[in-house]
Length: 293
Image (cartoon, rainbow, N blue to C red; front, top):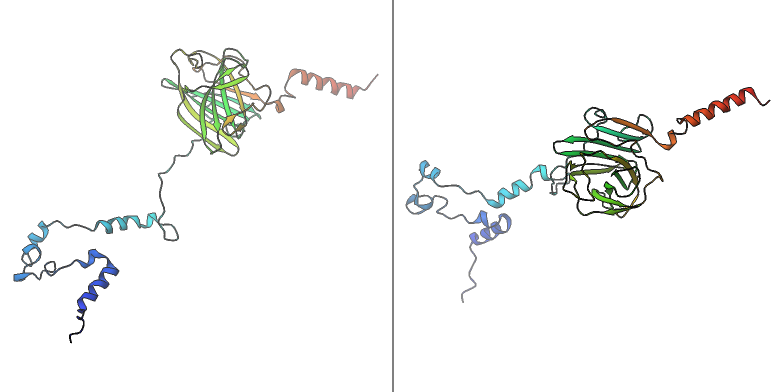
């Protein structure tokens, strides 16, 4: 009685090769090894035919190429696992105050000698071609804005604001003051927008064209306007009332073609700088020295 057919040793070797090295490594044939009939190599080429060997294109393993690139050390974490890569992000360029009054106009509000990173409020402007570039920064975690007004009062003003939202982004938004209320306008003249929230400060940079088509909510910047400066908190990316009851304004109309470096002391530094307060201090000192009659 005939027993079950015996497996040849080559069968087990082929199975083991298939499991360990994959199918690509186990598809070699006698013809590939140059052991074809008549002592000829693959595709009937004679052994040692160098010209024929060079004429046949070689095909690298696509899987091997992909794996080699994917597991390149540049793409491996310290633990040896691959991780996704992302293109580098350009950091926000710091505002240069050394250019104030020279190549751009600046307004500073706060402590004497403050800069764009320490003032309560900072604004700069400069002409770039047919655009005006604005830089704004304020000591707040909500929003910072500039308004263009025909007077020094809030109402009927074109406003550009940089708003810090709940996702950590700083967005440039356009508003129009209707009385004491800022209404967001969908038509936004801002371009080349960038902003950052760092060290509890909202800072941004954007451009807007000097001349715009006639629109009630967007002024022509080639004309001179009073500048209104404001900043305050935001709730879920929406601006709320400004931090101080009487936000500072420019003393006179501002021309984008004239670069000045204007400092405005904040309320904490105005007490001893007004003429009335100085006169009061002198009178009080005289009274204390002379005594009462």
